[in-house]
Length: 324
Image (cartoon, rainbow, N blue to C red; front, side):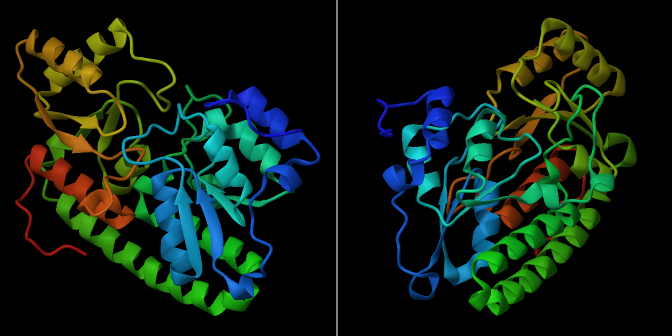
């Protein structure tokens, strides 16, 4: 069965293509040379997972990311080109925990043909958040707590060693270095957030992506759209959020790089109608990194950028200038 549907392929067509017995033979462009003669080719879903693959893989891997800056993984659907990139990989890495919901069937059908790993599923179950409104599933946004992203790094290391045993020492050393950076980042973030007055430690965003962040750093988190962005906030959601902000006299709310700002602007207007002027405190990176080459273009830089934006808008101390 040829894999050449026109332009964007619907999920069902992709699944049928992947399910065909001749898929890899007919569609894969994977190189036949052994890994000892070339780099490991990795295809990653989100920019955050792609960054993790580069950190642990180092010079031994070539990483292709499917979702760039500002892309919402909750709503992302695979294109024909994505299918080819997935098929040509030695290893496919994704977040898991239903983050890439629209790609779930594609990723499931790859299993057994190409090695795949869901890095967030390396986090122990007792450390995951299971919101009642997200029935039967966990909150997938584990990367917002560096202490949990350590487990994702371990999962990535294990997958690479299983695939490329000869380079195990490289992956182990890269992981040790990255974990040390995560520990430094976590301590720095705690110190910065501790400068925000306790009564102002409330984080209001477009969707509920920062539960793990809030739990780690003692911040109350309120998201307008809940865990997923698949359904939009309604009038009642905006009204309830506006009443909460006005009552608590919260100084700032935040937009997100991967979600249109109109819902937060609607909340801002509703709060103003209740006699309180709430500012838009800045842009947070929730489900995607920033542009390559910018501070937020890496995982560590993204966390730093988010923390500084939050601390500044909620009345914390000015940045001391020293960052991990």
